[in-house]
Length: 130
Image (cartoon, rainbow, N blue to C red; front, top):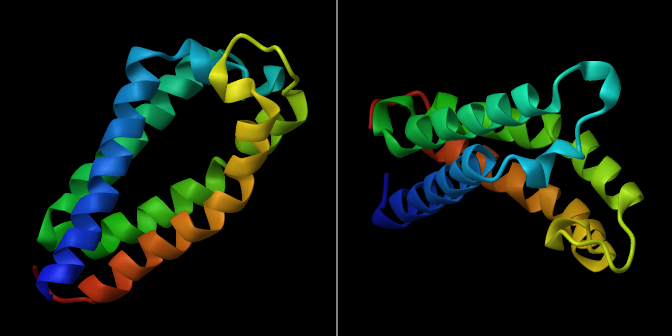
């Protein structure tokens, strides 16, 4: 892999690591994204945070980067319904920045480049060891 490809992968790992940490440190911000029918929102938020941290580590390590990129792309797709729910539930004056309509709706199209980014990391890593 080229230096640029390592930087792209490292940046994705950093983003995933920060998001995962935020899920664990500030779970209340994300609990409203979880439909009531799925049970404990806190458990789902913690689970997704751990999944993001696991993807971050997998992307950061060259030997597991391809699998990490694929898992990250799948994770970005899997959380999309929660982002849609957050946008639908958003309204002006909501106390959480994440529920501000401008932010909540702007996040939706951002999932596309995130999936593309993770897929590129997986492609760049190929089947080769780091």
